[in-house]
Length: 112
Image 1 (cartoon, rainbow, N blue to C red):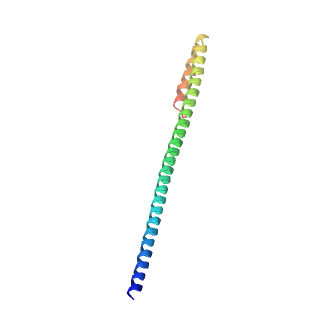
Image 2 (image 1 turned 90 degrees about the vertical axis):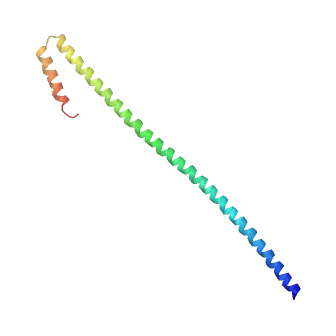
Image 3 (image 1 turned 135 degrees about the vertical axis):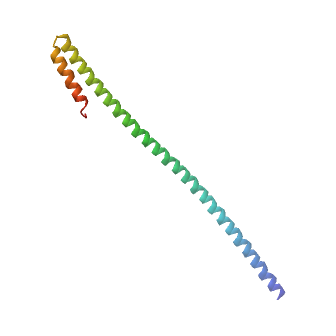
């Protein structure tokens, strides 16, 4: 019986070692999988932040472009008004010049 007991104990120890080895391998695999997952999540977060930053830059660039266009329109309008005033002055039409300037000043108070 002593031999059977030793044989059973050896089998139990062998199975225990095998189970511990398998648990160790599974734990290592799980840890490595978790590390890969975390690295992928970190990279995904970086990409999302870059995308948001680029979207903000694009929106800002569009806003600046629209402001630039509006300034060009205003400059164009001002140049036309100055040309009209200059023409009226050169042609000696002082009253029309004064009326034109007054109309411009009235428009200035109105929203565009």
